[in-house]
Length: 333
Image (tube, rainbow, N blue to C red):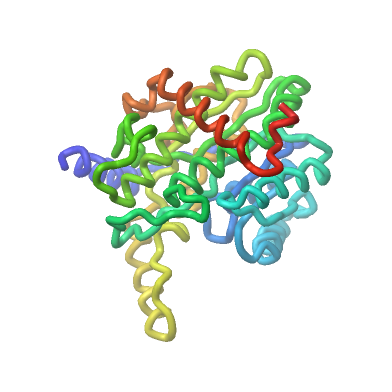
């Protein structure tokens, strides 16, 4: 409890203070994928910002891809950018066919060029009323683990050859994993054994702990040999689609949603403020792989997240899993 109160106090101080901003970088010639870029999300702001700086951006979401694409292009045109450097495609991280299909589409559409992969897409179910019983995906995995970590690992694995090639050709390719300060709710033992008492916030935290391990392992395995670097980051407590209540319907529901949005805006960062660390890690020249970032600076994550043996074991376990998927892209490795 003292740790939780400390986190809340630190967040409120940061909320009232100066918000760090990423410094604009010329991203011309850089090809970027941003997952989870539906409107009003961290991914949307990240995709819009990097595209406005000249990057060729492919944005993904699960639902209403045309709306996401048109919204991105409209907002880019409003600030004087063409929007022609943005493409969009559906991606459901829980569906292996969707991941493989997106990877195939991207390779063809962007001629195998990929310099930055932003693994931003994720879920946090029942934030206001945490579940005490696990919700499982179609293939039997706990839904946060399946979406936030395994889906992101599968996507990264499918795109790894492109990242490696771009790293060798350009001298700089990178994977940016959006983690969370909630990664410290759990320890490494839960990566390999089932939780004795389930709590959906712990399940979310576990998936975000795994994202830190994945970033560090990419750095160790491919940093020197392929110029492929990776970081994980905490964007802060942000008011996005994940934090706003969605269950209410009808006229009463819309009113409740407006009230909820007004209240949460007082205690949570805006998507624009929250996206700054993602944007900075995706673009800055002074980039240090294998680190954990918050507020556009390197900070210390939990002790468990720095365990190299756990990271290596988790990678090997995840690699074995991804090689079992139907029509996997394992052959390209």
